Image (tube, rainbow, N blue to C red; front, side, top):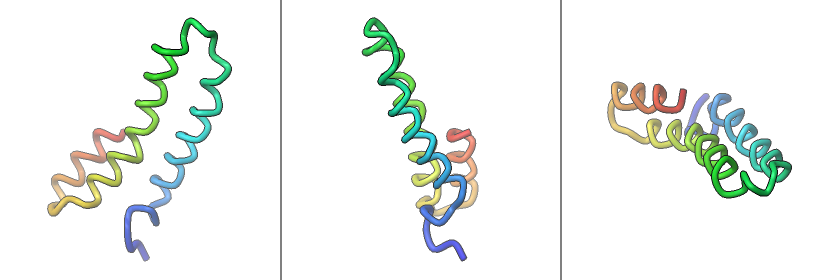
Length: 71
């Protein structure tokens, strides 16, 4: 039974993706440190963030919109 967004498998897997991205960007060349690594981190964290924000919305339509953003 889903009690909150943390129970959703898609949210759990997206958090795993965030963890992996944070590990991998450490290996990027120094010249990519501020541009590419930042973009990768922000895009990865936006997935679980949008799932969580959509889950907390009052309507199903809003929730679906946030799931589209996450995708």
